[in-house]
Image 1 (cartoon, rainbow, N blue to C red):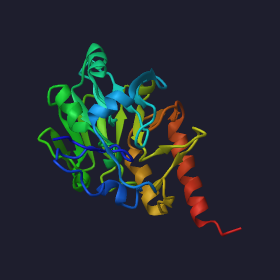
Image 2: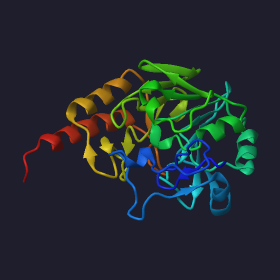
Image 3: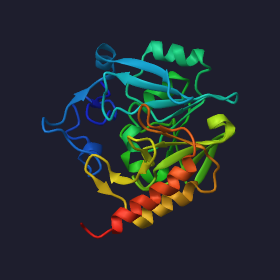
Amino acid sequence: MDALICTTCGTQYSPSELPPLHCLICEEERQFVLPTGQAWTTLGRLHRTHMATFRDDGGIMGIGMSPNFGIAQRALLVRSADGNVLWDCISLLDDTMIDIINGLGGLKAIAISHPHYYTTMVEWSRAFGDIPIYLHKADCEWIMRPDPCIHLWEGETKEISPGMTLIRSGGHFEGGTVMHWAQGAGKKGAILSGDMLQVVADRKYIGFMRSYPNFIPLGEKAVRAIAATVAPFAYDAIYGAFWDRVIPANAQKAMYDSVERHVHWLHRDAL
């Protein structure tokens, strides 16, 4: 039986004889189903149609897919003497990718910001020795392929490796998570944000949305709560979910300015 992958969001479901009737993640208001309808693929087919891309993305190793697939995010390989961590995930995984990552020190853990990036996380865990996948328990209903390798954490923060702390930011998803990397940005600290804190196209500001494709903004209370969750942590850079979406310096000021700009436009009278 194949473990089918939704072509719109990249989520892999548990192996089954027949395809699921729907992708539950895409049918929820934060995602969408294409006008052409629900479609599925498999990891084996992806091996034939896509290839991995590895490149430095602002001082950290990014891992993506070419051509773009699903939501088109890239994962980040956070290297450390205490063991490497994969932040967020992509759908593609093959032997060449495994060899390259093992050549860089392998992986000790995976941490994922929110359900849109769960993708083939179980395949990744198994490929590197059933390493733990850290997901916030508040989002457990969106796990479409349960497995013992998935570790559900609770509360507001969790250190998964020295200097790598998961922070429950909420917002886009109830269990939405960012990761503080103390050694990032030349030891000034960095936030790996997925799209809980969406680095926007000008790379000067951050966007805050419940749904990005469906244009549902977050309200003032939610945005200020997100900012408060990262305020105790020192950081100079923010690494967003997509290639080149990096604020390489003065990211704490960008956070403050982004919150104030968002709130201003929420409350400004219509022109």
